[in-house]
Image (cartoon, rainbow, N blue to C red; front, side, top):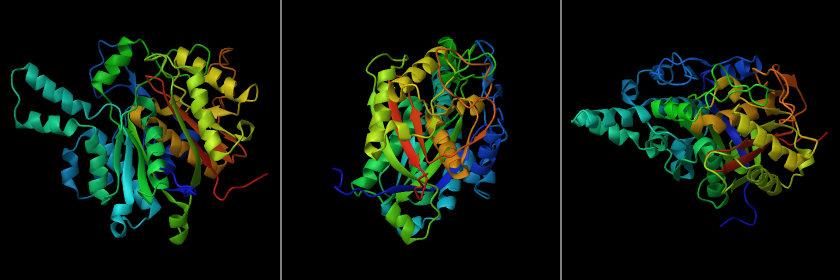
Length: 409
């Protein structure tokens, strides 16, 4: 049940491990420079797929983030990516979790599980055996083990949630955390998403014919698909009262959240559902559509998704669609981590007053009548950012970030 006077919620910590940077400053600097984190896939055999492009986090070593912790090297890759991003986030926030353990929870978006562990277990079964190593792999596959691992590592004893709503899972995790905080179940939450590169995920998108032969080109003419990727990003969110009481640095305020289900098609999004989730976010923030400054969008680079997303923005904004950016044009599509990575970019844009570019653009497509900030970062007056996310099954979730303190023209 929501309070009549719900607490204001702010972002005080961020962390990211992406294909173009293994910490937030590096990631955002490279995003502004238009760096491309897409290359030939190394981690799995893609010889029978319709593409060999992927977004892998090369040269990642958990020991760089947790020196002296040999035990973490035994964890699955998704857990390692998540823990690295979470450590950055917790250190950035500076919140004394040990003193308030039951006031701090974890909400994580996650899609594919520790797929390599599951695949290893299945290979053993197919070979007619299942030894102790295979059983341990099976136990480590479960999606909730990632959020559990974050809670255990940092001593967060409050509510713990794992959300598997596909590619919008991180935004849904933020929404769940907001609800928990507004009803008084937590003062602070570690929120975000993580996913590791996956053989079965790549094969699925390949079978759908959805993977681009080179790079994703969101909202561009001649775009040919998305590119699967991996990564993790986390935000530390807490009540404004808590942040002010301890003198925390506040990166942004979360003023709105909305969600919807298209109930339409398993893979084909519906513009009405996307627009409805965005309206719900704006309504909860008491912000009119014309007051939105900037959109951080789903922007996969497939023909259908970009066209539908553009139609949703036309429904919502009419002819005055704010400028928008697709971070996936640089880092690829990191599945359950995608919208968390994009939230970090959105908050960073608010702080720096600059729009990240949408890369690989070949020119406008008449079916996508949007300003996607093509090819080059753009200084801009940004008071708020509407972060949209959509997923298979029609799952839409939208988060609205605002400058803190709020500034008017």
